[in-house]
Length: 227
Ligand SMILES: Nc1ncnc2c1ncn2[C@@H]1O[C@H](COP(=O)(O)OP(=O)(O)OP(=O)(O)O)[C@@H](O)[C@H]1O
Ligand SMILES: [Mg+2]
View 1: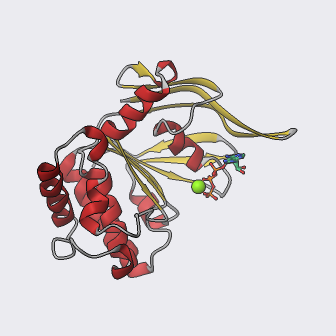
View 2: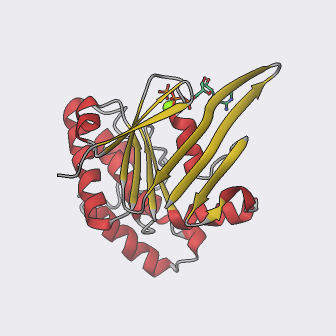
């Protein structure tokens, strides 16, 4: 579970300070899905970076499973990220010289998984996103939707506790967008990770159980009654 208390993030550029998050209080329960929306520059990606321990808040605390992330050293944060947190971005961020399978395997290297098991698990992860027939393709030999599937497999191959997705369908055409959204939804239901996703897709936002709207660094959460 995540517990954010009074999270403020300021970026300093020369003499100017931008307050990207302003005193955010937020709880995200295990296995929940939280959809994040809001205008450009509102602080959505900044919040995801905080949740992913990619950066530290200027003020306030972020607890993950009872551990205050601010108390962890850089190396402990790196370990936590590689074990517990999967990321998917708008740009797929695949390594162009590696095959789909090798790209997925990279997520297991920091965990000390041996080569045979890496290959097996990467193949299984690619199978689970519908790319069992594309293991040896390079990113340039895959469509945009397929590249995002590889990135999703890479994020999930380690069975993370949390999946953070920042506009995962932002670079895709409409049909492919729905495919990827459906895939993410299915994987979330099957695997039970905590899922936090930034999306501009208003249909997704309407259907979300919990929707966080971020404007000017302030978060408002809307909760729907469970059906
Ligand atoms: N590294 C940085 N240095 C300085 N300012 C930053 C940095 N990252 C973000 N900001 C500023 O913080 C604010 C929030 O940015 P953020 O990227 O979180 O917005 P966003 O909601 O994700 O927007 P978008 O929808 O365009 O992706 C913006 O005003 C942005 O210019
Ligand atoms: Mg953003």
